[in-house]
Length: 338
Image (cartoon, rainbow, N blue to C red; front, side, top):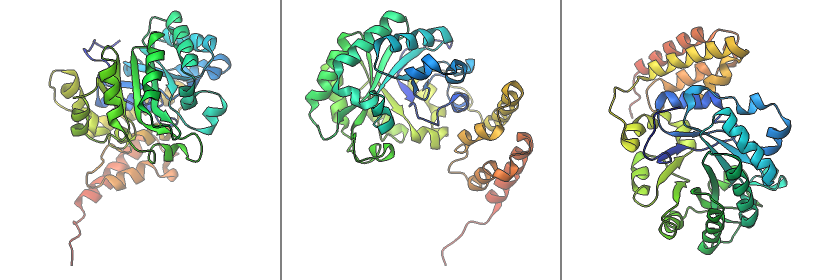
């Protein structure tokens, strides 16, 4: 377990399907020691009937790490909570925010916001089954219902079941007519509703999520709420995270690793993962493609690591080719206007 921090939800990286697997989280942990990391959502059905090792395995370096689950049946959620504790997670988080049709067919995700009593029953069952923090991630509303009373009453009822941490994506979830991607972009952001939740429930930990792209925005939100969660911005611009331990967790200042050192550590990890379970290096390398974001030569470096023709090569050789490509790109003359 990591050394304790005074504000465990001060800054975190969102759970993202097909992205925040254990390889991604290992990479993020090389950049930040204390930022809270979340798994992809795992359904309670998968935890009852699927391959537990595939769904729950993580690297010890990932702490603090939370397991996000999707489900609505109290017994199944209690089972998931017990597994989270047995496997060594630091938190179990219930997904009440995903708007996808597949999730709706399973009667969980954002549609659960219409059933706060069901969510409260699930939270209570999980709290009875584990000593871990039980948290909820949700939206500010469902479909075209834009009343603050809706989200206030949801939080109030679920908090009475013992949930003390609410991670709030500051958009409505439109359950029909929008794709999951569109649901992250089209419903308007209304940060003021999340701020109001904190004012109305000062004893709760309220974390804001949605549309946040830089440290200045994080600083502004922290004037109103307890924590900030970033998703795709952290994934595409991971170097942003290197400032977070000192800036938001009060960690002692230390020399930052270089991107080259991070890349070396990832190649070591690729070799270890392949030796342990045959994991191909390209399943890991895809998560670090933003490492040199904004630097000259980054595009050629990304193209090399993404080149399917190089898959038969060992990762150390691909790294050498990527390094050479990046140097070529950095040395190229900068175009000037005619």
